[in-house]
Length: 175
Image 1 (cartoon, rainbow, N blue to C red):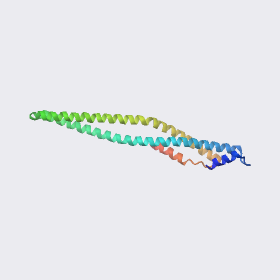
Image 2: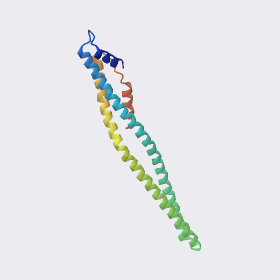
Image 3: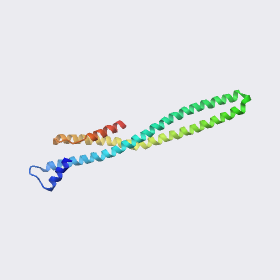
């Protein structure tokens, strides 16, 4: 912000001892900061969206595991009831009805499992473009932060890039 004020002050009236090179350098610094801000805003949005989706995805995966356990449990129940049907001829009608009921529960649970599985795949596909964009932003942030560091060293100034480094680290953790 201080550099920006200097640039505006110098644009209004030239000061002795301030060369064109310094003004050009400050414009370049401001351009890099603007680029970093744009990428940072985009990256923050990506981080939030992917974290939200990952939270939903984690919940869906837990439900998927529970559904698979329920399928196994219901399948075992259906098998047990079918065995009972064949073993107990005197209770034939009763056992047959229970077996059919267990099969319906198994079908229902299987459909629920397939729906959850489809939902998980859809969420994973929706995350792919954001993850791709996050990888792209990682590369751009690396490059721009490196350039900003080099420029700061060459010019003997300090460019505040901690926020951008933190965003870069968050993006890397996310992937």
